[in-house]
Image (tube, rainbow, N blue to C red; front, side, top):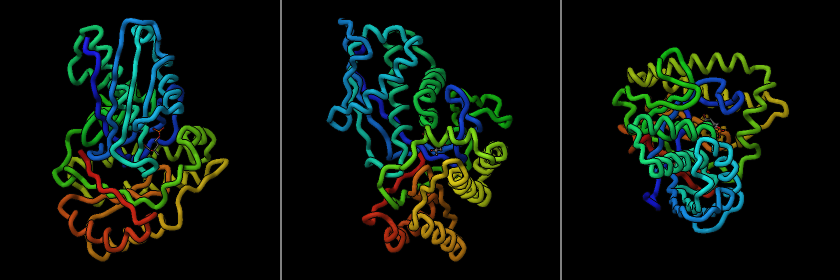
Length: 338
Ligand code: PMV
């Protein structure tokens, strides 16, 4: 068996948002994301097989230091799926992980790290059993386990555009794993994502708590219907190169996500004054220049500025000259779809 190996897995940014789930990480609505290229986790797996330490004794390092919080999270997840991986009990496992992007930078580190972990355990199983799955089956399986670790992580297994959740629009879509959406118009290839760091503070509410607040949100059913509709529309827009529809949906999704947080009980506001300033500036710039930029936002205050690669030079001059003034310490990150 191959004892040591390395997995690299990217983060992703949702265009249609997953917010609300049923038991066992089944999403209330489908979601669509761009897989990022520069924001990824590198995870090293070192495996000993002889003693009987078992999964509870795995050792874990994050960016060169032991990290008890992450170690516990990994053990909890591995134990929750241990009935499917009987070899766990005979493993002496050391994992070390690092991210290519800074902490609390508005990039979902759970997506990249949990997809790396899921890919890793599927790889260990393959090495142990000698049963090699086809690439598609391997990805499907890794996406299934990534979902159980962190919902949005299941989308990170696929490059470019991922879809997670059942939609009548695509027969092979599933609530249990993500699939690749390969049919994208050239205008969306390597679509850029500049992450404008309004604040690097830890978010006040975990996504787990946020999802569960949807259970009593008075707008929940309308929201799930809207997201289903947005999913179908954005997939058509991605396929046909319809930037106008893309922009409309992406911005509505971002603002709806925050409206849902503001209307839950208890409610919470994660946007900061500079998030709103940036939203205004982005819309204003789009109107004045006709350059197709738009924003999306995750569960935090930072703004993801999305734009096609053919306008990247102009947009990045604007960021460097003006937008960075509204970022904490002028910080922003330039990434793009894989
Ligand atoms: O995967 P989770 O449980 O961290 O939830 C992700 C939620 C959002 O990032 C706000 C939306 C999404 O679809 O990624």
